[in-house]
Length: 375
Image (cartoon, rainbow, N blue to C red):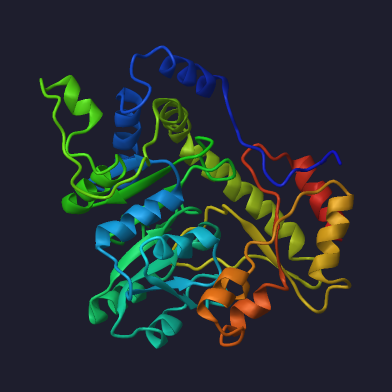
């Protein structure tokens, strides 16, 4: 099937390609100048003191959990309406993700449900800024302060999202970003950890390079060869090739988000006229960059969500369902014997939501084609 309107198309420019070519002419293909420049520019964009490039957002979350010192028996509150990596990062540390229901309007984790799930074993809260709209960070930070819990931001959807004019990724203890091909900017695979805590940065940098006491770039400035392994680390580095692509893309992140917002506004205008389809809700105290454009297929619509998904596919239109709740996935059912009930919002959303195509280079003609088939 040739897709007339794919779900997503990455925007790779000639300048992106030139930057990648430059990175291939270096002696160092890892831990070189492109990574330094990318980390520094990213730090400035998010308005934090520190950032560290890693291989994926999953790795960023895992390193954040390790930096917190999670151990078996600890619990971390996680939204059930998210991708598996959010909860998997907790499992990697031997801790337990406590799946939590979400808000019916924003699809973000519900502060009221967070409070219900706090126990003596709770060590942290991971929030996911769903679709590019921030969680209610004031309320969640207040909960964290009251119960002495660290707040980690899963910002995979949220590069450029703000809460009360503060960038997502600068609000919690760490921000964890994704540069997967469908994300706001891409490096193919890649991610970033942001923080204002120097000790967290040091821990992340050590762990992402096998727990070595001396990093490769230090050997360029010091006449030393001896190193020590001071912690159980990983190979979670972001190489120069991907860093060069990320640096080039980051130069136009504002333009990318503006294009996505304009596409969403056009969708809003056209889809709100269709009976039985609900458009995304945007809260007044935060922006929305529309990493996802998620509609709800209500009972008034003539066919079900699954039927609509199939019909659009036949017409060459790519869509996605993000997400099927984690509490219904086999791993969490079998390992933790999670109840299928107790998540009324997520259980309702799983049968209603549909994510429509949205990408920076999407044309008006493509938008019209999608909407005409929704009608």
